[in-house]
Length: 221
Image (cartoon, rainbow, N blue to C red; front, side, top):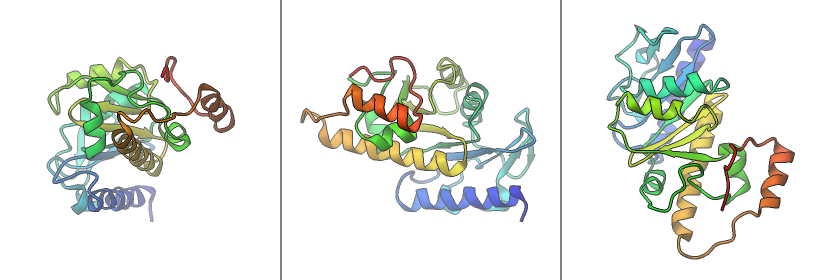
């Protein structure tokens, strides 16, 4: 089995898993994977992640032009901006997952760290999460907002829209997106209860032991 064939099947498998667990409804959400030739595979426009066909995924060249398959998601500029600024990114997952969207709408959210350091796994898989303002879906201006983060974040929340998470593999991007959703759920469950977050010392220990990369000012809570 060629690498591209395996990646096509992986996109469909992970997409179905995310959809079946209610992490992105209807035809929302999209997934992309960078190929060795600089091009990428991406889910088509108006496609449900639960019913993807490996043969009809959009294949783009290194300049973002459609080579084969169906027309790609309108969120291509969003994916492109994250790939261009975060060199280690090999896959990107964008969902409309309920708790992450809810988090993005709360007034107290710090754009530089949408979530406090709640759990070790959140820090290890997501680092810090940036919040960018609302843009109409598919608006090229969202790419400028992502570029403004200068590649410092692998996990980003689009206000009133949903998370965009990059990983060095498709599996890593999916798992980080799931961890972000679970942490957003925890935050909403505990909101107003004055929970204990990880201390600065505990965060420093995780950074040291697991090589977690946090943007400057990532966690000032």
